[in-house]
Image (cartoon, rainbow, N blue to C red):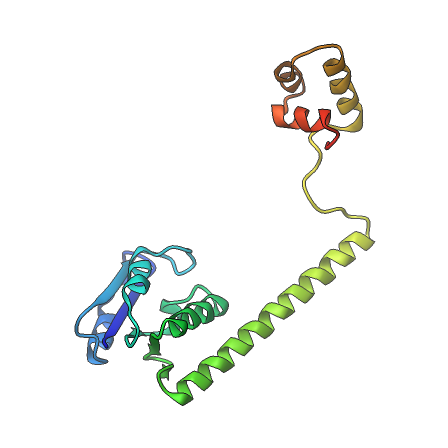
Length: 186
């Protein structure tokens, strides 16, 4: 059972010193994983990935502040829930959240509920926007590579025995587009 620290700064100009001091003072005397010059928005952070792989049941992952760990509230909730499922605690020093205690778990569950609520609102707004766009005659998705007239000409060329590569080159589209056209998917 150990307190394992994780510290991160987004740019090389920033300094990890404040975070490292706080983590050591909080009892992370052994392992402290450090990502420097790594944005929190990135899905992979090498030292965080190593840290998450290294923690064992009974350990506690300690961060200076919540935003050092999660890209978003949803991501943070996911990471902490995965740690919890593995028997690993989580502690944030600045926000004073400790999932190894009952009150810390309560606070974190409130965060999780807020993240789920926010996610639901985003989905609702997205669906409403798409419905409005459809009602106004806007169609989503990518434009067709060939207009109906050009598709008809391309099919005529294929029917006359032209090679797919030559037809694709003539219309400046990929061979896959011509194959889809020939299969009736265009």
